[in-house]
Length: 149
Length: 135
Image 1 (cartoon, chains in turn red, yellow):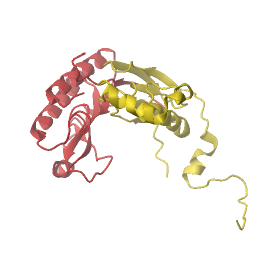
Image 2 (cartoon, rainbow over the protein chains, first blue to last red; image 1 turned 180 degrees about the vertical axis):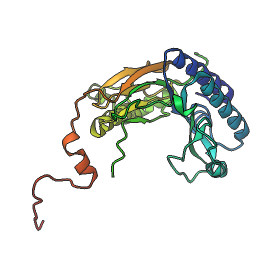
Image 3 (cartoon, rainbow over the protein chains, first blue to last red; image 1 turned 120 degrees about the vertical axis):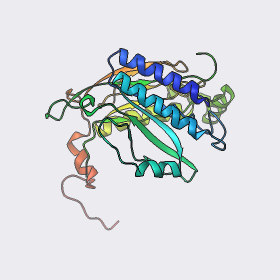
Image 4 (cartoon, chains in turn yellow, orange; image 1 turned 30 degrees about the horizontal axis):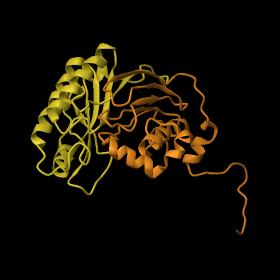
């Protein structure tokens, strides 16, 4: 994970592929895996390239759909964008879902959780009405930004 | 109200710290306490975050995915904890990787808080007759 969105999306899509290759149905990434984490990976969101983040989020969604895997990663988004996104209707079950924010923040960039989903027929979870299900899930270590990878 | 959630995806970013920063946190904690606090790093995130996830899983009977950034210095490596509080997989610190975890919510696992969890969530924090005491 780094300040470089392009590098981050490369790691995410490669690890999604690796997870899917092992039969995983969910790939879940660390906080800020795509956007980077302000205060650690870079100083602040001032001057942040939000358009690039939107574009790469779309790439992750497309990759999730291609692989037939659910992807979850937290990103930061400006409050105004989050409000617009929340007003956008989900058109159908195959449309990637942007879930409500888990947190609120006084900062200009608050957390947003992105869930990239495929069709409902591929949704993970209980396959019977018994209340119990068998899941295959993946957690990942995020990409390193130090050049050691 | 209970939502009967069985699986939580909880992501972290406790990483990309300089070795000097990690050493400073360790010094603030007190390196003499390292043997008593086995952790990936002698840092507050390294000690407390995995412990909180383990306890939360066991107390709430919930499987929890705990990914963390591996950007060096990472405070602790990603792991997965079962609903009985047992860790079922863990990556290596500072090394990117994919942890494959199989989640079977139908598995018969030890549930240490099961007998009173719903009652406690409902706000009833006692059993039997509630004693009244002027103190």
